[in-house]
Length: 339
Ligand code: 13P
Image 1 (cartoon, helix red, strand yellow):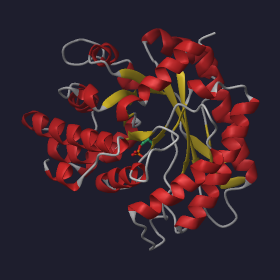
Image 2 (cartoon, helix red, strand yellow):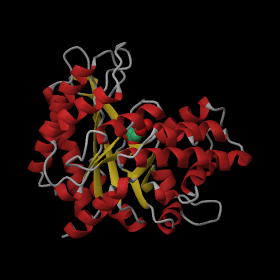
Image 3 (tube, protein in one colour):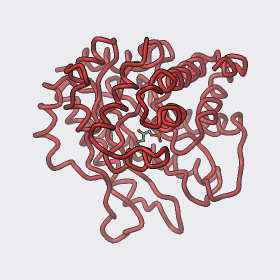
Image 4 (cartoon, protein in one colour):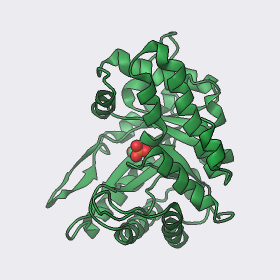
């Protein structure tokens, strides 16, 4: 019913090398980010911080959409305008995170499943009414002794597909985010093997649920070694492994894959994306949907001080620009140094 609208929105999200700002940290998670720069986690500070990001001058040059947390999505800026209308007038698509976090899986508590499906059908029409053009649901996959199990991959994929179907029935583009965490001691090869299994489950579930592939966006991880592994890989090695997996599992017609940064530094996230596009024209749109890798410098520049807003906006816009250049295959060290 909404097919043409879904395709148009999904294509707009990845057009011209643009990417998404993931500003959908829950109130708990943004509290951790604030704590690192000495900012108190109050509603006023959350609002001021999101306002500085969303009103960054010419934000739409690098950013096609913003993912918000429910509180921000319903909130207003200091001018009294809603954040949704403020983004729309800047030519940026408003999006919302609709999952309700994770919980341990029955029978395998080290693994997680994502919550929020029961109430989703009743919540979704309201999000559409309030102006959401796309939504996000994140599944997290943990690597460890004997895990992930097929049962965990199957259940997370089933929930992602059910969520995606509900989004599309409401004219909202689903971002399907199955994230293999990079927090553990596994090497890159294991990340690659698990990611391939994971994405195979996800696309099988999407097909089984009759999700329109042309009207969705994938948001998955790069093939990187776990942080505790002691292994390091060059951007070229990350790009090679990531593209190897994508060649096997990404279906034709997918409008785009927008990476999460997952704990990579700002520079790593840009250089890894750039290395993929340096390998020549790719058959898919690969872009970014970064949280930490777009915001770290901005948060450090801001530190909760109104006089630091222009510097914080400049830091954020610079990262957006560098990632867009990476997605266009035009990123250079010289451009990076012009900060
Ligand atoms: P990071 O880029 O910080 O991983 O956040 C992106 C995101 O949306 C995770 O769900």
